[in-house]
View 1 (cartoon, rainbow, N blue to C red):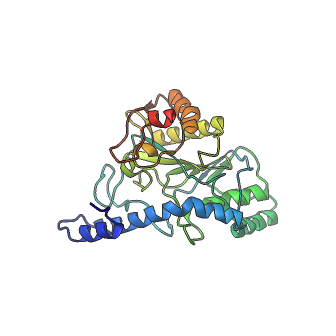
View 2: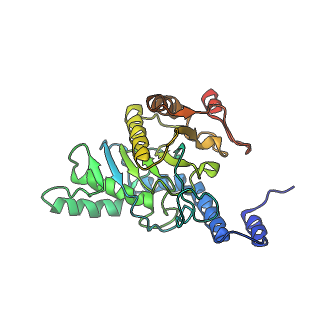
Length: 297
């Protein structure tokens, strides 16, 4: 039997009856999101190579940037959150999460910050007597105008602003960025399209790096994971326990988020928080890999 194309799948679904409201719109948006995701890393690398974006990996800012209230994005990458908490079917899902699903973005040294936006924010900052820190940005130290500008511009990149080829935002609830900023990207109650079968019940958290080429700054990343866990608990998530899982266990992503990240970040953070890790779990999808298999590779 030949493999079904996305168009075949869509045509089949259009012939079904008794579909939930918004079902076909979700399918179209989801398939578009999958296609976009397949090219994001390559385009992000090209943006930096061609000078459209500034590399931020040399910034060490130790900030938290919360843009979860800025939900007007070029394209949605989530189920429309127009329902009550606990609904996890249909097109209007909202859930309290039971764990965290970890990813890497596969972008070497992380996404870059749009150069035009960097220049814009740096100009604004240089004209003020003090760097105009955003109300939703918490920093452990004073930032230079250039650091501030790159941090704000990177937040735009994660939410897809300005929109252009493959720049329509990312579906992760939070990003552990290359500039050591923890970006809170989408509301934790929302069910986003980040992790296939993990979508309903896990926060999608991405380490912005390419795990096959980079080593995680473990101490910094563990601190970010602990902060995410504590914030999630404050907002009603992880009520009974918290489970850590990886994207590779849910689909064909063999290096997502990478063995070293699991060993040096996930496992120590789980021990500190009392979170559980199912080493042998994986779905039946061809190419999926359990945590144990990723570590043994």
